[in-house]
Image (cartoon, rainbow, N blue to C red; front, side, top):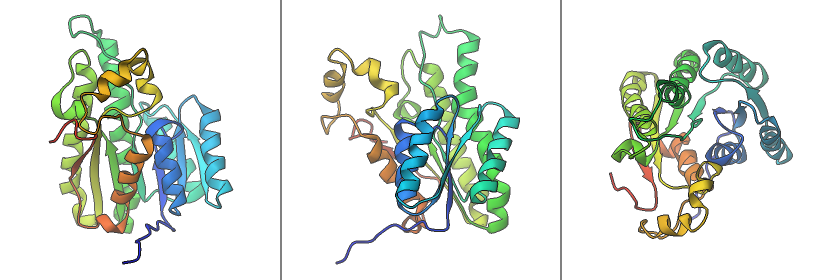
Amino acid sequence: MSGVAIELKGQVALVTGGSRGIGRACSLILGRAGAAVAVHYRHRRAEADEVVLSIRSAGGQAVGVAADLALENEVEEAIRTATKELGAPTILVNNAGIWEGQAVDEMTTAAWDRTFAINTRSMFLCTRAVVPAMKAARAGRIVNIASTAGQRGEAFHSDYAASKGAAIAFTRSLATELAPFDIRVNCFAPGWVDTEMCAEVFASGGRERIASTIPMRRVGRPEEIAGAVLFACSDLAGFMTGSVISVNGGAVMA
């Protein structure tokens, strides 16, 4: 049996937090599959420029878009820029997020609100901004990046876990609402992944301790999450919507 190649030529993808980590891997793999990619970043333009250059060097189309995704006007401007440069997004990967946290009795209201602004409010604002064009085209693919923390909770990171649990509920709600327009909405729940976000925890033997708790005995690579995202954005996943897919080496089987 010959292999099946995933082809996204003619699609336009917006990847939030697309300059590093899982977002970077998603931007690159979607670009390799033929999608034109809007690589979102907030401050780290150099990293976003590198991703854009990588996609263009391989013959693809890409542009960097800057925005604070917690701000409605900046989200709308980012969508306008992406649409002007590449066309209206037909794929949205809501990946941008932060992971901070502390004991609940020490957590400030500002810290709680910051986590929800970046992890959850941004999903809503970006989704709301792209859906009208997707409805008009009667086609769209939305992928929300959650976390195992949203499935099982996470002590000392209750803000993060709650925000990712909200992402899961948001996915399921939208899947039902948008299915009549052939807009598929799915969610991925990564576990521990080798990214900058986890670097401090992985230092001084932390990686080995964490790996020992995972059935596959290692942490994930960003490219492994991106590969699953690519599948969800393709026609191979044509009958999949409202799914919450665990990509965590077996750490959480939900």
